Image 1 (cartoon, rainbow, N blue to C red):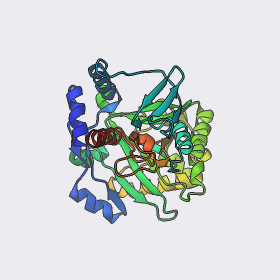
Image 2 (cartoon, rainbow, N blue to C red):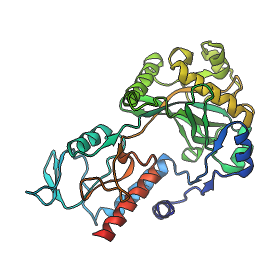
Image 3 (tube, one colour):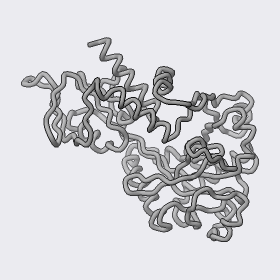
Length: 362
């Protein structure tokens, strides 16, 4: 991971400083309420800075390797008795290779699963997480922000034993939308991307194991999509509700949003999330909010804004060895398509790991 960070720094200009989410005092306090503080080292790049880094990488590589865009891969044929190389069939031409790395990301999960099935490589579904994004005054998080910048908490609910995590915390940032597969989801933006800090902080509470058994986890992505589609069809995009109204089962009005003490940074449609978010999911998140309020007083305030909705997809877990090589010799999986990594930095690290292993082993 340090090597990945070094490369990013070489190709990026004026990157944010690294910070650690570890804080012993905060960790002890969290454990008193059943929370766990996750330890990690982070350099928050943001979308715009990541695009800049990737463009610089492309310009560095374009004259050294052949990079082909806008080309659909139709099929992969494994090595066999009659052919000593992989056959990669695309819409334009056919390619041949002695070694092959699949690094097709999250969006191609169905295609990757189909290719693995055709090559008799085992995959196991991992499902999807569903979440709501909170927006509160940054001032109530001052002690946390000063010591860790971004706190990452996890929690196991008392009643359902569902697992919840805080995700993508943006001090002084904005709530924004993102478009995925024709759906509109809520997201967060770091204030460094707009150079216009706000008075708020926003983060998502993800319920990550809503479907627990392998028998029904295969339906989790479709279920997550259906939740987003219901939200979108109700308000034309993202919905928002005051936490106090959510507890009362009351629709939040535009007037109440305009007069709310926590000012929204996203123009979302006021509504009653009790009508569109599954009861168990909503109860899980409400429980987490009250527990977090013991850590950071003010999160469970009636003026806290709750936005719906957001999903995080996990690719099927592909069976690989310690070198990320599948049972098909010389076929490797790198990045999120493997189901092992779940972030840009992890995906990059896995690609470097595969590349070095191939270089060493030939």
